[in-house]
Image 1 (cartoon, rainbow, N blue to C red):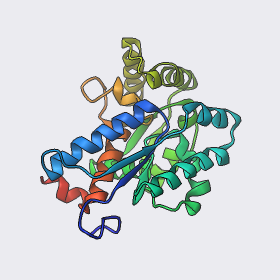
Image 2 (cartoon, helix red, strand yellow):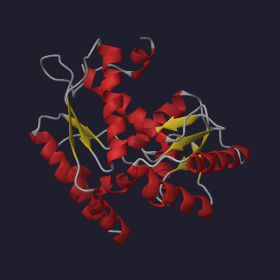
Image 3 (cartoon, rainbow, N blue to C red):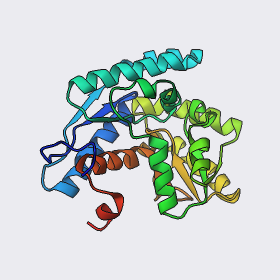
Image 4 (cartoon, rainbow, N blue to C red):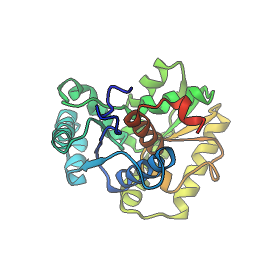
Length: 247
């Protein structure tokens, strides 16, 4: 039995440390639908969510104050613990930069989004992963360090591609503004990454799956939002990925 699972045998309640509404909403919906797929009609683990205004995160990130970002995350964890969560996830890649600064202080254990993505990349036999996301995320070590620990190669977009990708996420996707120009941008970046030797891309902002998927992408996609949600459900019910794949 999973160490997170409820002693009664019921799925362990999941806490969502939310940042943007769009990424968190997609993560929540995926938990509900994946829970029903594995557990039966209308069944899923209990889910609690907390998020401060996105502006608070953005203000700290723009100042480079990652400790303050981490404090916001810890505040959410404490509230989620009080609501009954047994472990937490964060459907936002960018603010995972702050997690190493505060993880030891967290009253609840975490599933790390980049670790979940790396596990899936290895399971599917990928070797070199392109990283898409905000400039804050793409410039960070969140994915490179994780991929390297798992023996995976990686590549970043060009500076110009990063700037446009950042604008699309922060000006459009977090507001649920979905434009065909955004799709065209990501298709172009992914096509270039394919030519540079990547065999998959991580949709490394949890809003990017709103406009990009395997049907449009020149490369297979690793949807960080849905992968994290699925991993959380598996952890909550005490089922490993191999068992779940056979269902």
